[in-house]
Structure formats: C-alpha cells, structure tokens
Length: 407
Image 1 (cartoon, rainbow, N blue to C red):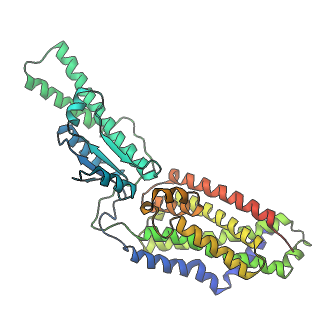
Image 2 (image 1 turned 90 degrees about the vertical axis):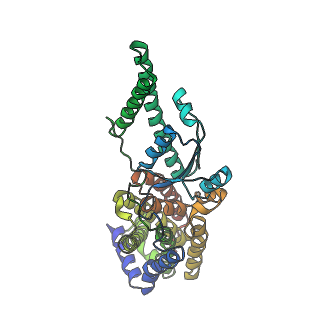
Image 3 (image 1 turned 120 degrees about the horizontal axis):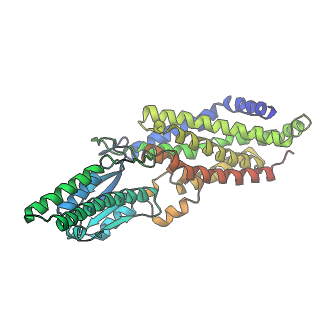
C-alpha cells in the first residue's frame, strides 16, 4: 500500500508538468502522422485485405494445378497474386524483401505427376525466419495436402471399381474419376473436424485502398516515445536523491524494496496510460484494428510497460543529474528505435539487419503491434514477444536494484 501511495505521488508530480503531455502524447501523435503520410497514408490496393500476399507462378495450367490455385485463392490466410515472372531470382528477391510472404512455382507436368503418384513436386519459396513466411508456407502445404488426398481418393476408387466391376468405356471411367475427385474436394469445404487458429489474418474482401502506412508509424512511435516519456519519471529519482528525499524516506516505515517498487509502479502506469491513449487514437482516427484481438493488445501493452519502466528505473539509478537523465534516455531511444524497426519496416531491410534487430526489445514491440493491426493475429502470436520483453524486464530491474543509491 505504501508503494502505491508513492507511485500516486510520482504520477501527480509527472502530470503536473506540461512537458509530460508533450513527450507522452503530442510528440508520438505528430510523428505518427508525419511519417504515416510520408509513407503513403491510408494507402492503395488491398488495404482491407489482411491476408498474406503469395505469388503463384503456374507453368502447368492443367486441371489439378488450376484446382490448387482456386483452393489457395479461397484461403482465409493467404492472398494469391498470380505472376508470369519467369526469373526465379526476382521471385526470391520479392520474398526476401518482404513484398510477398511466399511464392509457389508449379512446374509443367504437375497435374500428370500428381495423378500418377502420391505427391507431385512443386517449389515453395519462403523466409524461414519470418513469421509471415512460415504461416504462408503452412497454408500452402495444407492446400497441397488436401488436393493430394482428394486425388489419391479418386485414384484408389478408380482402381477398386475397375478391379471389381470394370468399366464399359474410357469415358465412363473418366467420368467416375472426375465425380469422385469433385466429391473429395467438396468434402474439404465442410470437414468433420475444424481447427480454428488466431495466428493469421481475417478473410476480408479486398478494397481499392492500399496498406495503411500508419500501422508501421503508429507502432513504431509508440515504442520510441515510451522511452522518451521516461525522462520526467527518471528525473524525479535524481531530484529526490539530490534533495535527500530518498534518504529521509528510509526513516519512515517504508522499506527500500517498497520505495523502489513505488517508483517502478509509477513508470509502469504512466507508460500504460500513454499506450492506451495512442492505441485509441490509432483505432478511432487511423483505422487501425488494435481492438481486433483485445487480449493480445493488453498483453503487449502490459509487457511493453514493464520493460520500459525497468529501463526508466535503471536510468534513474545511473543518472546523477537531470542532464544525464536526458542523455541516458535519448541514447537508447535513438539506437533501439531505428534498429528495432520503429522508423522503417523490418521487412524491407537486409536479412542480416533483421536478425540483429530481433535481439532488441523494440523490434518485438513494433512487430507485435503490427501482428495485431496488419496481420490480424491473436494472442498466440504475441506470446513470444511477451516472453522476450519479460526477460528484458527482469534483467533491467535487477540491474536497477543493484545500482540504485538512496544518497
């Protein structure tokens, strides 16, 4: 209870200063709008379609390959973008650069090969370190499996009936095969067991609009200015140490742990309030679906606040002057923000840069919010980000407690 009272005192002191509103709310909104309009604003084609884009190159153009394309086009997970591009290098570059989540190359003879054997070979190109690539590949493989099982059912039915009764003509045999194949394909439209997941986007009708650029800038600026907003809270620790307030608190019934937790709780609540306001701004005014998965959003907000507050507590423990607070806050902000994809999407950066980025906490924050708003994902997709941020929180809090001085 005493820690909560101390946290309430800190919050009252923070929000009395008009500069707090500047760094917590006004600046992130301004930069969100500035960068958002610079990157295209509310966008062009397929804004409303949250499915993952997949390129299909069909060199077969026979019955089974066309059926496979139709099945993938009906997917609620991927959006098929057919291509006549023959340069496999350019297709791979498109996947690598994040223009599409994956690509499928259907070779000539695919249909005949599938009819004669259990599996026909085709090529799937995806980025194994990218969550969108893995999700798209899984959906493509599921479609191939459904088609293969349907073809195998028709083939076995054809063999069994031919051995037992025979066919009067080749046309009769072909008709039986086609009917069996169609019934097997129809059965996949209403399978007896349905598995529902929240790892990918919704099946929303495509519009004439493009991807909402504010999805990138909103999540990026929230992550960046959550750190910037710590300057006021960390400065309170410095001032209380200089004025010997912290030392006098030790003469009260409050323990050192309660004092530490009181200041930490104030930072956590401050960041949560900041993120909630910015999320509502994005939801109501920027058409970003933060509330499409409320539990995922809440989990990411809380873990982001815990991590950020841990960093703020460490800054307050290390800084000896208010000037040092500003420096210690701006350095991680301007290092972690661009490296973590707050300024530009990680999808367009080189693969090596992406691997390095995911060692930073802000990359998990930015991509976590984009998983919710852009990819339509739920709480299962946010769990890895929450675990990483929790690990950073534990390390930062331990370092802050170790370095914290009351004099």
